[in-house]
Length: 447
Image 1: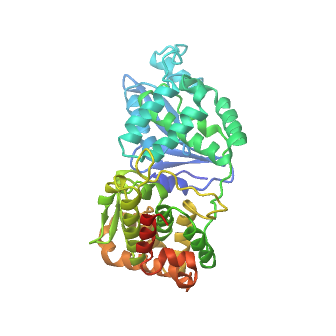
Image 2: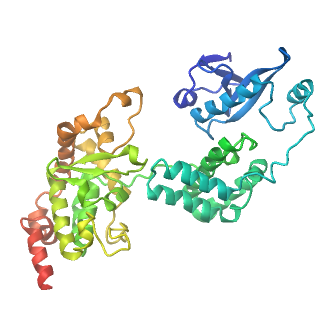
Image 3: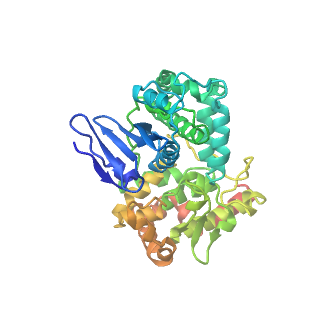
């Protein structure tokens, strides 16, 4: 297959088709020498340039940067620029190699091809690489505490015995990484195994920006990734009456309202648990989420339907009664160390669906409510694919259009329970007229 010229980015690289046999190169239209080598099974970032001495061309070399699954196009382009700058100076980017062409080029340039640096002795260890990645990348970019904790758990628990191991050793012996992936798969499951390897891959790529002696091939790219299937745990309209009955039977009224708001908003549980009282603007009927998944730059407002406003009013009343001190700050207060609801899990026999199940349910029922996929993405703060994303001003749609769509979803959910709010005693004591006032009265008198 003949070589092609395209603008290399994550999308275009992902769309490159493998040849039936052999390989071809997709050359970047912006950065001369930067390209992707596309084989039948792999795609590899690389640079190509001419080594010169005293103005004369010594050799044409091609240097691998890394597998496309191990780094983004932006990272590969930055590395390519660095490599091309070295080549322009007559220096070979690879610190050591056994490639005959490269060895010949080094000899012609007057470089001792047998010279080898003892990079292992001063190579950065996994512990230092992780701490640098955590502080300079995760914390500085405003990633949520839950995201940082997930990365920390992978590195400090699953790779605990590797913390003082130089990354150079892992890079030169990817068999260690393959064996660890297999071990984690057996002991903890395929999803955690894949997730831990993604973390290791990210830490290694970040470390290599400052430690160019590390090999370009990421050791995590050697693993055979476990198959992952999206878990389908959403409820349909017919499942909601039973779910409402289960929620109504929960003894803690704040947890009841939390699960209901999770369903009505489709929000990630952590975002709601960490919501503060001043994030709620009842005049504009929005709940501000300042640090969702993705960090502060993804902050957004959730438009509130009538049912969501009533839910929040109830939880504020209950919070002020049961946790008066914590309720001054948190929307979902509790007696936890943080002062807010810290655990949203329920026993499955007590409540069949919670957490991400409700997020999937929201997305499913949005279709039943006639809400478009585009609007559902905006309501859930999902990224909008394609070039149109940069032209969307979400806040301009918030006050009217998105709130109308939110109201349609809430109406669909509550219509599914029909007359249960009046006919079912527990649901009626939760959602019926003046139910919260009666509940607070019973709580005050200890009934």
